[in-house]
Amino acid sequence: MRRFLKSWVLVAGAAAAAGLFVALTAASGAAQVGPKPGFLRPPEPNPKRGGTLRIAGPHTVPHFDIYQGALPINMMVMYNGLVRKNLVDGLRTIVPELAERWEVSADGKTYTFHLRDGVKFHDGSPFSSADVMATFTKILSPPPGVLSIFKDTFAAVEKVEAVNPLTVRIRLKNPTAYFLELLTGGTSLFLAVPMYPKKVLEETSYDLRKLAAPAPGTGPFKFKEHKAAEKWVFERNPNYWDPELPYIDRIEFLHVPQMTDRGSAVLTGQADMTQNASVDVWREAEKKKGELGVARTPSLASHTAHINNERKPFSDRRVRRAIFLAVSRQNIHKAYQDQEPIAQGRWMAAASPFSPPMSEILKLPGYRADKTADVAEAKKLLAEAGFANGCGPVELVSATAPWAADIMAPAFAEELKSKLNITSKIRLVERGLLPEQYKNGTFDILVETQFSGAIADPTPMWNAYLKCKASQNYSRYCDPQFDKLLEDIGKETDDAKRRQLMNRALDLLDNDAPFVDTGFTEHSTVWRSYVKGLAIEKRIHSEWGHFDTVWLDK
Picture 1: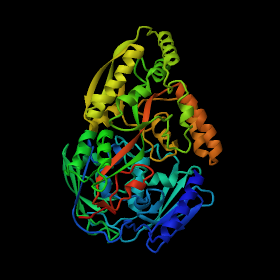
Picture 2: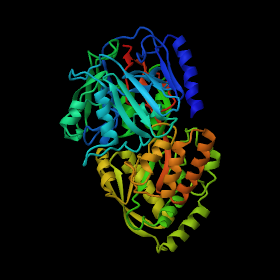
Picture 3: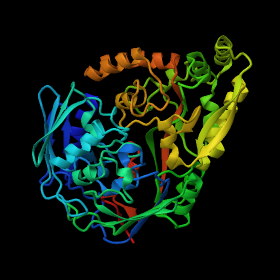
Picture 4: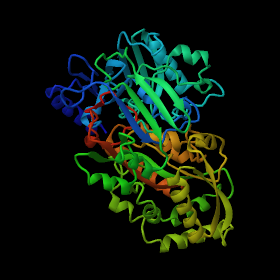
């Protein structure tokens, strides 16, 4: 991972030479380039002002509290973090945002962030270190009754303190190679690290679910309107700390749950872009170069079948291992092939620098295409557990979105029935309400995309989803041996040694499977050719939450 961060510094020099205001930091210290750190500009010359950007996608939420599970991909246009990924170089570098600059101590355990002066929230109140402190209190030590789904993602943080109104110091338990990248919010698909106003957090007792609208942010767009299951509307913030941005006047997020319909909305001009069209429509858009732009970017989110480890018969590791072995990932990928491309991962995205080669993964039990030996072993395990003739019906919960309800859930149910004679009863739930199902454990198996890495390094994802009693451990999995490995991985800074520890963890997870990871997706983006400023075709992974530099060439 250190080699990866060092490469960002090299990219920064090239970007600065091209006239972009870019700033980077590596694990060993800070490097700032350009007179106005963090003031991004679009890659194209002479951007135009005005207009409305319409985005088709999945835009429902159960409430407005991102740290308690509200999907951040629409609301993040309102907010800033301390740092972010660079929109104009394909998300290859880390740039300042509310932290104008920072230093890292020689031992790699202390990060000192110097905050941008003069920043105001949308309600006019000034931003300061007190807001950063309050936000990290919400993440790391929320009051009783308030959930923090990212608490274990930031397990490395030992202490956060305000040095003065414009300086914040974060102390880590041990050097953590990926910490700065984690603060960017990664993909902003499921993880985001927005800074909330202390005043609003205290008025709501840190529970923003009480609000009838999102809390004020410091970002380039202000909240205007939310019509549930229809659309979100955000308007330009005229007092944004970067006075050049944003260029457009308005963003409308249109709720379009079906991937085919999202792409079709762009093809017919009803929307200007979608970040995830179905594969078949994406192929049609690819034929219309000049009129439309297309790109595919790896996602760090996996399709999963979360198995409730606390419910019988799944409390028996033999039953979970049997399902892990027998389910054909290849059959599920085939059923889903017109929706999204899926790359098989092994408890981490295939795009991770720590992932085993795909050729090795596809030879392993559970992952290989030939299921003969896997199904035989699975049936043996079920018989040992007392289910020689199968069992069921088990309750299989799925989102109401057509890709899940009509394809993914039935495909998984068919694998259980045909391979192991485990029958299922499918129960549909609006996707925005699924966090309550996860939190309360009101499911046997839940099919969705909730095993998501914020960054390519799998460690924070494992901390959040797989550590005993972790904040996003929806399967209720607990293995002290795995937790000890995870602790050792977090402390280690040598990449080769970390890889060895991770490989041991992979073997452990395969043999005591907490759930079934059916593969990490790629997102198929389609946009009208007049949508500029986002460098989508350069992106090394998906990013759904930021549109600071977008402009419309029409």
